Length: 462
Ligand SMILES: Cc1ncc(COP(=O)(O)O)c(C=O)c1O
Image 1 (tube, protein in one colour):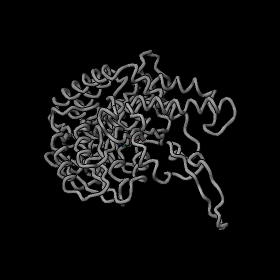
Image 2 (image 1 turned 180 degrees about the vertical axis):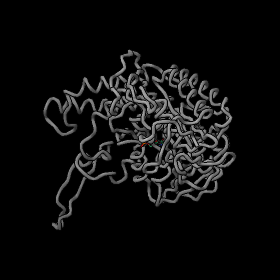
Image 3 (image 1 turned 180 degrees about the horizontal axis):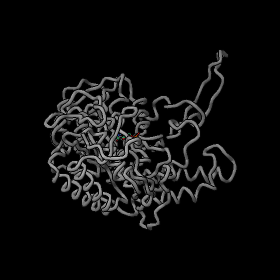
Image 4 (image 1 turned 60 degrees about the vertical axis):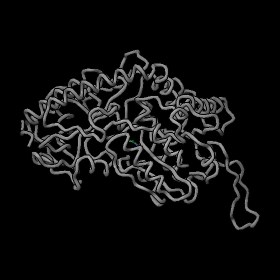
């Protein structure tokens, strides 16, 4: 970030975020404040999280392994953070909260503890983190439903036809592509009716909505700190203790083991007694700062109240949708239709535009950060776009001719601390780009569109 200055926002709201006054250069000259509209990938840190971490930093010490004062303090903080997360998620008394690296790690951990013969049921619409960890297991892939009701019916039919044995349903709470909210409670009811367990991928839901594990009656919840305004490398898997307790540890090592002795055979083998609590799956030195940051974000979100956050977000979604609806060339991607409830995540294609080119122009000419591509949800994108090909076209060449199918999409996403101006600038930029074309020329570099620094004038969008 050569000419960008990175200072922190001074706003005192409990949900204010860092980076609101960061300025970035425009390829056309001058600079603007950065409009971070890629929360679905990684949200900015809450100021409160940053302050809490900074206040703790001098007291940082090892966890579960030191006799010193700061080690004791850090251990307490780590365990208190676990309790805070349990409260935030409305965990049942005997649920475990395991700190992981992120949602991907949480779901891979769960995959590693499934009892022998477990069949997994997963919609093809899932993020790859929910789709891929079950490889090597018996898996039933469910077709993309076209309404929340249909999602429930599709799952019900699949479970009814399933053979006996342990079953796990994996479902996302809010899509990272369409932002649409899934009928989690209803899916959980169906799963349990057929003796299946259910894990909720709350990576996109938890930053926007309350997630109550007991009220939703899901067996596990997974989410990532960096999407919940706490970007310090930690995530969570919370839920039923039995499968976690009965399985081999996710990682073998110190912290997970209670007692280790040389085997009686004397052949170099060792015998291990593993912990039965969350530590069983947290081998190695725990990420206390990551866990503390997540707990801080949970506290800040609870304190501010999700009602206020939701109200604000719905207002911004309404403005965004109304603005995009005025551009006939823009097609918003949706599984469940226009009226579906969604979080602040929306993807779209622009007729005649290469999505990478469009996103590059938003960044270089307007200082707006969005994401383009297939969003780690390739099967879903194929369904939504009706396109088989995935290779993006050359930059500058429209990916799809007018009336043809597009191959990639642009995603805009936001949340706590997003000012009106970011959404307004975004809608204005979309309108101007569609109407006037890009003001700069772009070239392809490592498969991405980037401004052509050698160019000094407009080249049109095509
Ligand atoms: C719905 C969903 N699930 C899982 C993940 C994976 O999260 P992480 O990359 O933090 O492991 C993402 C990331 O974008 C996501 O959107």
